[in-house]
Length: 58
Length: 187
Image (cartoon, rainbow over all chains, first blue to last red):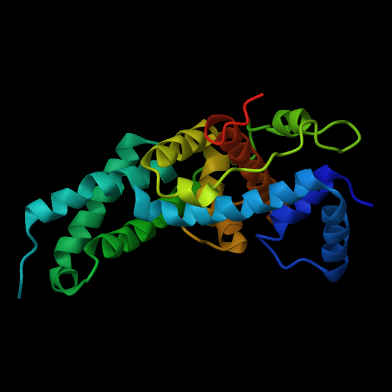
């Protein structure tokens, strides 16, 4: 079972590289049980969206 | 053959400067790339006239100018990405020794609405500026200029693993900053 620190690293990397099936399963398992990381995951998605919208908002 | 109205071009200038500053954080460099961009625009004024969105087109040129500049500077020895930017402190503060959150992230209230709020973007820019220069730079290359991780590694002359680490730290830092200064989860 991976911890939150490792899980956030994987979540972040899933935005930068293809992740393996094993990694994906580990993340899903962790997320099922961890509300903090579920919030973190949603916020990562938001950060990407915000940064990509920035050029239009300046 | 239509000419570009110099006033119209000036109207885009402050927008372009802000854009360049986010990436370069150096007023002189930002001024230089924007100047080059405007000159390039004037040189291809026929294309400019055909644009439905001149600003988007100008930003497109500016992006290339910024990438060229970063590429040049990456070859110079003074830009060393990993050096002096130890952000382990942040990671250590966010997680307990057993790897669990010290303070688990709380839900953000209506984040989508924030995107429509001008004040949110000021906070976003400020949070970006608080990050160490090269962390912010890598993050903006990835998310703002939408470069691939491989391209970023190449441009900054760092390893892929290092690149992932830097991007992850940037996201942690930005998340934390927005959490405290915008979404109101100050603790």
